[in-house]
Image 1: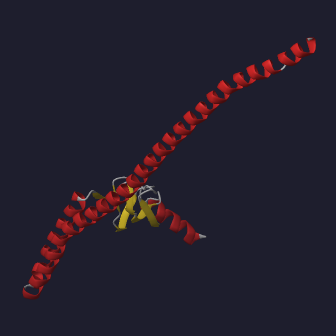
Image 2: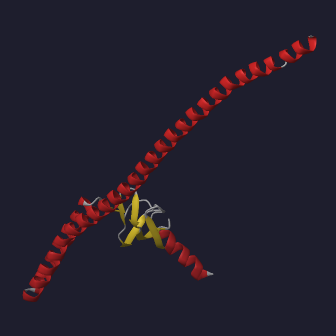
Image 3: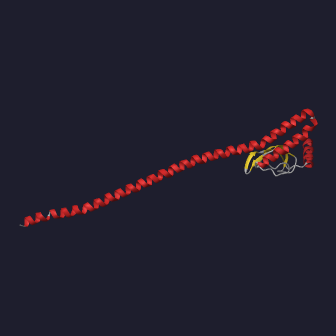
Amino acid sequence: MENKETVAESPAPEVSEASNELPELERLRGEVEFLKAELEASKNKFLRLYADFENYKKRMAQELEAAQRNGKFDAVRSLLGTLDDLERALGFASVKPEDLIPGVKTVLENFTRNLKSLGVESVPGVGAEFDPRYHEAIGAVEGEDGKVMHVYQQGFRYGDLLVRPARVVVGNGVKEAESSEQSAESEKN
């Protein structure tokens, strides 16, 4: 009889282990399903965000292109007045050549005013301190050291951006009297 009891007791623990494993298996399946649903939701959220970002990039590229086009349009519009003024000046030159100079001066003033309205300013010229950020030295002459003595080509900047450096001649720090003495001494030697 003991053998029967032993045999009868053996299957009982297997049933309880199987019944313990079944809820654990169901719990794990439920957790897997929950994680799959969470992953799917995260994937959908990512795809929406990615699509929104791609649309944003396209919209920004279009807006940048439109802003550049509008900026060029405004610049061309403001410069057309200068073109009209030059055509009028040439028309008057054939009638009265002596009237050409005042007309060209007026055109230059209008053009400078148009550049200022676009935010373009001239770089400081004669008498200003030489600044390599805005000036390109093409020579040196007698005069105050480091000062711009002559401007060969006007420079321009747009805000902090340098459009074109001014081509200038800079003083070398030698005064005329010193220069005369040095040349006299060099002639003696």
